[in-house]
Image (cartoon, rainbow, N blue to C red; front, side):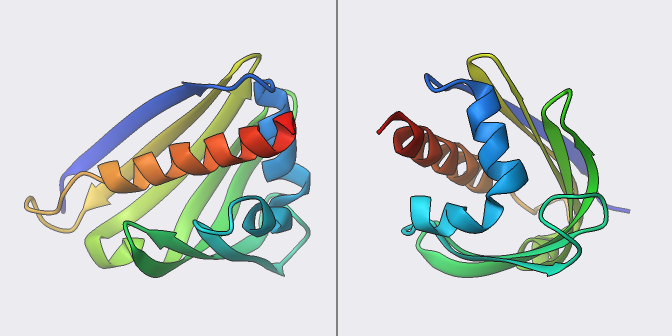
Length: 146
């Protein structure tokens, strides 16, 4: 069993957290148009956009490297403006036995929570990925403020 960890970061968004949530919840496939340098493609393989059980494939660039991430939506709460994405395939699972991403949004804040289990004690904390997620959030904010 690997070492479990949890990272949480919040970023202020001038467009309102609810607007960021709406992009993730109903317009996920447009994120690649909003942040093309970071997100190359988002495809919903199974189910509808952001409903429990939906399978979402991301092709993205993180830290200068092209990567993929396959996720299943475990929870989506429109009232609380949160989505739980469990990673089921891709580059993150090369370093981590499990990896779950929770996005939550309220008033002027977007919060990213990463829960993971490292494969080895030497595996780094996913700080680069967390920074990447915050940058994508800021790209979405910039798009919404145009």
